[in-house]
Amino acid sequence: MSSNTAFLTDLKDLQSRLGGSQNIRGVDAEQPVIAGHFQYLTFQSGLSMHAMDAVEHQNTESTMELPEGLSFNFMFSGTIDFSFADQQYRIGPDQRRVSCSVIINNSMDILTRSMCAGMHIKKVNVFVERHWLARRCHSPEEVEQLNRLFEQKRVYQWLPEQPLLDKALRLFEVNKVKGLADQLAAEALTLDLLAGCLNHLHRDLETQREGTLLPGANPSQALKQAIDQALDLALDHGATLADIAATLGMSERTLQRRFQSAFHQSVSSYLRQKRLEQAKKALAIEGRSIGEAAYLAGYNHCSNFVNAFKKQFGMTPAEFVKTHQGLRH
Image (cartoon, rainbow, N blue to C red; front, side, top):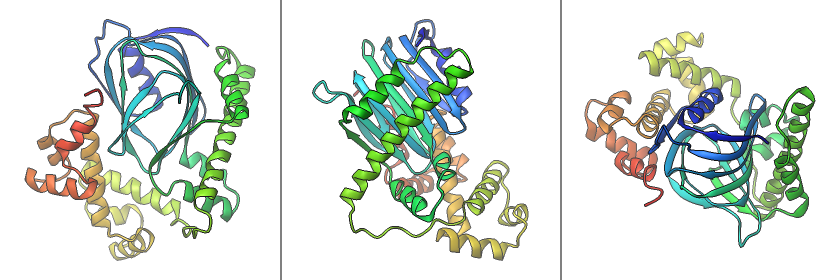
């Protein structure tokens, strides 16, 4: 692993390369944010590894969009405070024993991570997106198993058995990747660790949910992707339902019928939900005011926006902002 000192610009550059949105608060741009040993590697679209043995130099909060997927953290030292799915968590070693935790995220959501000056963090993280896993399912049973894993958002922590811990240690000790052979070796180690983590998760789920009926098959992912793309266009350009249907090459009636059948809600309610999620991102990541977020969501009256936001997310916009800006209080 390489020795580095990371400043605010380094963190922003990293997030830009990852293709996500991030808001970092409370940072002195002239001073280092993190100093020590760390590296970040992306192997395939949807799979990455991050290893870190470093000291945090500033009290900061970083808010970002977290895609659908699994984020595994092996914590050797230090603690990490974060807010996810409107709940606050702390992960770290348990009574000096290395712990492993996983964030299971079944839809794009906001994650706020708090840094504490002087905190020594030593960890290995493996992140895999849901679509990466889905492409590797080769039977209906594997698809059902994956769907069950993503039934709900959750954060789960356990004490890994020695074989799994040994895999994390091997990955942590990987030297700086210099060429193709090093890249392939690091990727193989990452896949091996991911497989061990998934086996543990599936085994625990079977133990805890023995005899529970499995959910039915998901609606067509191709249809969902096409509709989501059309709805994103509608959000950006104010397209009508007729415009969305035309983009998909079908009539409004067919669109409404297929959407209702696949997702058990109307297109208009789903569009309203997407606009509220866009407002949620604007509040947490872009630092917009509640009035600005209401306008982005298509509401002329702030009170209507507040009521809709609370109905959708179980808290008011002000309560949501407070959740993602008060981890250290």
